[in-house]
Image (tube, rainbow, N blue to C red; front, side, top):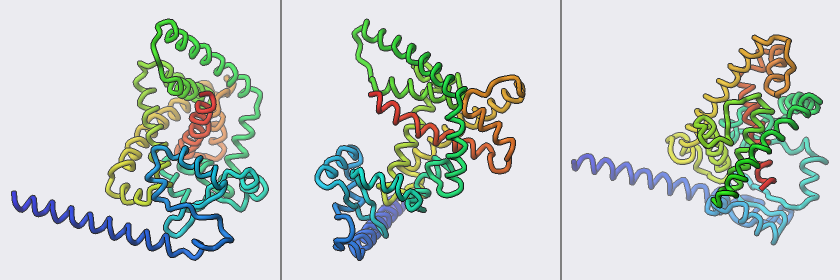
Length: 317
């Protein structure tokens, strides 16, 4: 028993020493940067540790800072993170000099596990190829007509649920309901999936996927403000352990969806109109099966979900 306690004590002491040493190293790296007092750079507010400390109210915290100074920096090891709420800067980054602002290695590394080689985590030719293909598919009349029909149908279903709550006098989470509505609509439009049934609270499969996707999204976002995320991934603890579990849930569902859709297209051959986006990408993948494999399609689905789910639901609520 004494040997076990001694071993635990030594392991704990070693862990504390490593964490403290790493923290001191990070602090030295952060505050010895040559740009910290250079007026040519945006003003420094604090370090990346402040973002981690305010992670539970991150957007409120950043909004308050932006009211004081629309453009500011947070220092992190080896680099600065610039935040801006200045419309001129946004136009410069997203339009005027878009080619100058790639994701960069750090962002790609943070996003890779969840989003793979999707449009939100790649640069250059891969980004242009996906954008060209996606923009063409989104502009087709068949897709526009199909999506309008899906959103109308699910909107009627949503109104029915809200009416039931209103008549019963029960409270409900409006944003959660809108998240479900958006996710179910996107899955139908994007992937022709009927089985998710997010608006049905008894759909276990839908619940598991929603929870896994949301948890994976949060854990991935934390990588941008947590300097210890690689250590957590190595030890398989905390948010990175949850991310690993979430990705397994997402992959299980998505790969099964791709397999099912391939079989459907094989049976239908050329007799049916390809309404959903996944079907159209599967048809395109037949022209380039080496590059547009199932992993590539999985990444497209994940990025499409990120693009449509939370943004639409947050706007509606």
